[in-house]
Image 1 (cartoon, rainbow, N blue to C red):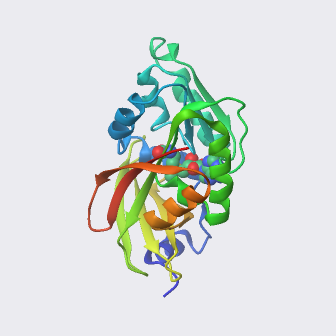
Image 2 (image 1 turned 90 degrees about the vertical axis):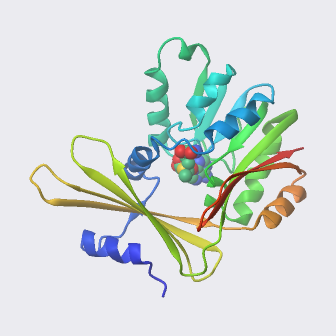
Length: 263
Ligand SMILES: C[S@@+](CC[C@H](N)C(=O)[O-])C[C@H]1O[C@@H](n2cnc3c(N)ncnc32)[C@H](O)[C@@H]1O
């Protein structure tokens, strides 16, 4: 079966409207609502970053779930993201921080991680949240070349990957309550597609509008997969050396792992 149960649910609830991109303006806003209280990776990344030196770059930083906590290290942070809305949310959150936390500069830039040019070097570059797999293998080659151009001598490139143990066709689903003035939930689903190499991520925002009518918005994103061995091979071909691997979580559907690479 090609269609996931959550795509079918989305079609039923929205009257067949095709889902919008998860990182469109509305999708970015929903993402930030369900990611707001998610602190996964944060503690381990902070610990690893503390052992590096120099400025920190976060690729695909979104609204700053990780980039803002990185400021606690007292080193300049740059976050890039392709979504203008994500960068607007990040800038807005930074501007609203207490003055004491804004002593450390954060620069938020709309840019494509496949091809960015910031004209400075970083002691650490982070690509978290499995966002590396928003890119296919040929886009990842471009990404690695861009990271090479920006990594200072002795710097480290940290990539968080999710190792899924889901079989083709299997899915995992979770419900996240959303804060706001009307009761709302996000239903998030992740299904391995028939090709076995990509996953479909669906996010449904479900609430009632002020008149009491059901209000559903559907978003989706395709995520590529590669084993850690394949990813290491790609990075070695791009000139990197794998230096460490930190397991973050396990579970039925797979586990998160931070992988560190040097040049
Ligand atoms: C799963 S979210 C992660 C956001 C953030 N790192 C977090 O942990 O909340 C993926 C992010 O990647 C961004 N993105 C997608 N393709 C991109 C690209 N080619 N270059 C830069 N950012 C991209 C999206 O806009 C989105 O903000």
